Image (cartoon, rainbow, N blue to C red):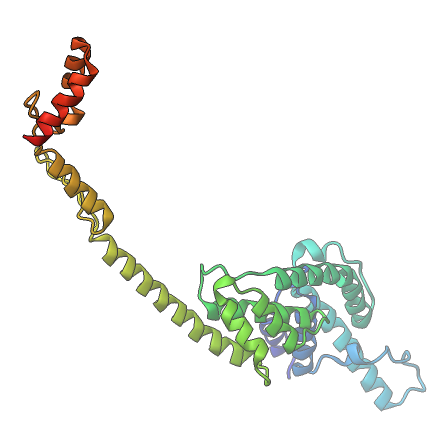
Length: 293
């Protein structure tokens, strides 16, 4: 690689590295080492600084020293190009690329621990609320597990499966019971496939229930039009018989007061008439006379 193409290639590779922003050190460090290796500039990261050149140094030692100095200078430049400006200004200067890389690592070690705790808490407390699909929900939980792995906290697949099951709402209770009864446990991909099917089944079941409710509601009593008397809904059973009995009573006529709705013995005017006469015996005899008519 000639001296003219080096700056262009260095800038091109540096633009492919994610900018170090304080939460992505592991990803950044992997990308830095990969691109420096592709550029054949990682010698200073892999080896210590060689002894200084003297008159007695061999040609091979002089070549190694020259290669190392070049790798060291360009590696530091490459790393600083891929660090956010607000972070870059807080990092101290170092003479070697290896020392500079170690300084960056120590600077973000505590930040990574804090981030790992946040991600783990989010993974273990996440709940499926239906605002997005089941596939997207499981994908997000899998991404959280991948981020934890990048931070040095490997989440076993069996634990991830359990976290996903724990995130399900109550309507997935039968599904959880079924999973706990099977002998062969599923991996994340198998679980995702089964949960997507269960999500579809529950949605179809919900639509069917809504259809039945709306169909039954259409048969309810409707409000009468303006100017028309409302009629109560027809009811079969004892209540209907009571209504028929009351309707029959309305056709009964009292022979004393000539009004409808009651019989002679229940007539209040007749009782008042007898009380006014002051003859209980006569009232009894008269009642029997009326009943025999």
